[in-house]
Structures are given as C-alpha cells and as structure tokens.
Image (cartoon, rainbow, N blue to C red; front, side, top):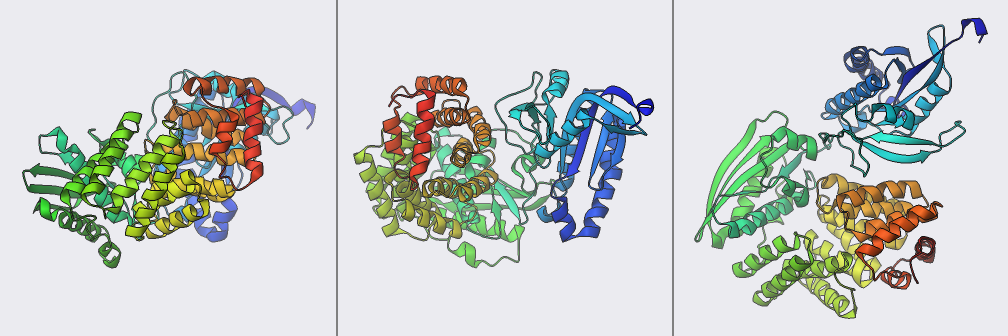
Length: 596
C-alpha cells in the first residue's frame, strides 16, 4: 500500500460466513447459491442497511461489513441470526444455510473502499470460532454494548485465535435455540428459543388439564400423559419430545407458536381429563403449531377398568391424524396392559410423580410406593424398574453412599425387570441404567440401553444414561453423540443438567478442558446445588493450569458435600474401563486441593 492513499479510523467490523458451505455446495451447488443469493437480498443486506452498515465486500459465501457503532453491529447480527433461525424452521437440515458471525471494534486501514488491519483479522477469527447460527464478539466490543443492547452473553474466556499474537477474551451472544450458560450481560432479557424442526413428524404432548376439581387426581392426569408419550415414542417414524420437557409447560398459559419455537415440533397435543368415581373422560385436540389450525379433536369416555384401552384409543387417533400412512404394527406393541391390578397402577403413578420431584424426601416416598405396587402385583415390571431408578437417583444426587446393600437391591430389581419384560424400552433403560452405572456391570448395561434405544429412539433418558455408560467404556465421541441427542429430544428437561454435566466430563477426559468448562458452567446454571457440576468445573480448571480457580471451585463443592475425598470418588468411579481416565480425575482433584 502506498502511504498517500492510506486512511485509518476506528470502526466496528462484522465478518460473516456460511458454516459448512463446501458440504452444502457439494450436495446442491445451484440450489445453495440461489438460496444464498435470495437470503442476501431479502435478509442480510436489508438488515445491514437498517443498522447503517456498509458492506465492504461479499466473499462468495460470506461478507465483511463496517459499522460506525458497535451497538449497530451487534443489533444487526442478532436480527440476521434470528431471521435465519425463523427461515430455517421449515428447511430440511441437510439443506439448511447457517451463518457464523464475528464482531470486533478496532483500528482499520481503508484503501480503495476496502478495509484491512488487525481489526479486520480479529473479526474474521472470531467468526471462525462462532457456532453455526451464532455470534461471537471480542471483549472490546462487549464492553461497549454491555447495558445498551438487550441480549444475554456467555463468557468464552481467553481464546487463542489463529495468527493473532495474544489470546483474547471472547463472548458468545446467546441466541434462539442455544443452550444457556452462566454469565449474563448487564441488561439481559430472556430470548425466545427457536429449534429447527426434525426431518420427520414431530409432536409434543402437553400436560393434561385436570378437570376433576381434586388436586389429588393430578398424578392420574400426569400418568395418562406419560403413557401416551411412551406409546407414541415407540413409533420410529415420529420425533416425540420427552415428558420432562413437555411438563415445563404445566400450569402455564402458553401460545402454541411459543411451544413450537421452544420445543421444535410441528404438532401439539392438548387434552383435558376428568375423573369422577369410576368414570374417565378425555377431551383432546391436535394442533398444527405453525398455523394454529386444529387437525383433529375428539372426546373419549371410559371406565377405570378400561383405562388402558382408553390410552390406546387416544394414541391411535393421534397417530392416524399426524401420519395416516403409518403402519399400525409399531403401535400394537403399546396396546399391552402394564398390570392387571389397577390399584398397583395407581401406586405406580403416585411413585412416578414423587420420583419426578427430585428431592431426597420425595425419593424415599417414591421407593416405598413402588414397593407397595409390587406387593400388589409381583409381575409389574415398570414398578420394579422405577424402584431401581430410585436407588440410582439417590446415589447419583449424593443422598446416599451407594453401599453394598443398595447395590444388591438395585441388581435384584433390575434382574426382576429383565425376567418380566425385555421388550419395553422404558424398563430396559432403567435396568441398563442401574446395572451399567450403579452396579458396575457396564457392558451389560450398555447392551440393554442399546436395545432400549433400538425399540424407542425417542427415549431421551436412555440416550443420557447411555452417554454415561459410554464414558465408563472409554468412548467419549459416542458419549457426546448420545448426550446431544438427549438434549435435543428433551430441551427443557428439568434434569438436563445431567446431560450437560456428561458433556463436560466427556470433554474433560478428551483433554478439551475449555469445552468442558463451558458445559460445566451451563450445568451449574441449571442446578447450582449439583455437586457434580462443581467437581468437573474444578477438574477442568486444574488441568488447564488455573490452580486458583480450581481451588475456588473446590471450596464451593466442599460446602455442598464436605465428605468428599479422592479415595471415595475413585471408588465411586472404579467402573471406568480405562485406568488413565481415573488417573486424570485423581490428578485434577489433587491439584485443586481435595484431601486424599
């Protein structure tokens, strides 16, 4: 460059690029380029103009934009990504275009309408570490927008950017469909989530409205939903949102389109149930969440003696309304009564309600109720499975030491489940969970969970437990895949921190400590009292060389559970098949200051 033509100024730079453009062009070059051209014309360029930006150049599948204000740059980026998320809702995943956007504020050099310099290079590198559909900004940019733009940001920590001499702190703008993390900007507001639709018919079954006027009947209404979700999930041609995510809408007046955004489904089933004496009435309607149109509505009356037939009739009607061409054979397996004793079934539903409260006291109550159900019906597999789940839950949450007596009982319950039913994915998953994670029969647990998933690919808990079993077996990539599927199947699950914690552990064992830290922070935001999240945060800090941060995390973990010792934890994790995994945890804990 000749010095007489060089002009310098401070500017905000936005760098954008299409994620996976080579793959998209390889699949459909003409279609991808035409779609990209249309998006630039209808979305990208108008948003830049609205926010007083200047498109310096288009780079085939990307763009470089200059703004006079960082606030304008960030607002423009957020609106572009939200517009893209809305656009992609009805686009098949294989053809979906997603931008990565990086933003920096710094000194630039202008020559012949082009811009150069470190400011441009940093924006481009930040774009490279942004998620598809995400926005990543430098700390310099973040400081100028903090308190001025209504967004939520996550601290990504120090990032080593290619060809940039010193590490830079970066921030991720939390957008629709992204998992929340632990650090917020000053004027943050909640952002609506927009999850893309799966490639097959997708449905969420909302909690039934209890019209009985009796709060004690709440568990009955919840149990009906549980059974219908389970039956629908067994159909491999459907994508069914897990119960725990559907139930986050319980008792809330919500717009159907909000449910579509937050759960990423095309159809929503709404029902009410009225139980009076020996009579039950269900009124249901199936809604297209995109348009709000009613696809189907019906009313069912039955007696308690025919309750299982009633569940089957509702399920069959929903399937027939969504995908009339589906074979009915898949649902036929769901038309089997789980128990001949309605009283046992009633106790089971009460136990399920208690188990789902996730407290020490409710866990004790749930275990007692399962025992009562099995005393009434010794062949009721689901109640045995739930009893095993109770024992694993109290061990996993630190409510018991998981001693020999509990392990013996968990093994007995799991073995009884397998004697009674090897074709019900929910009870298979519970048996695999107990044997693989708690008892230590890891390979058999993995096989049972794999069978549960083959029978019901929509069973989120099976995916999450399988992720942990794969960690024990030493296959971190397989674990991450299972956790990711579980996160998508149940994005609003109150227990989602377990999947997030699993992701943190998988990255830790792979030596990706920064990724592990991010997932640990996400898990801790979901449940700040979960000691496992603080432990893996501590371990990631320790192995990344941040000893002081590791010791601070250990101080918090110790407050939650003062009994923690390295020897106790290593005994707890003796089922890891790779000795180096156990050694890695031990080394991290020692660095953080945990006593032997």
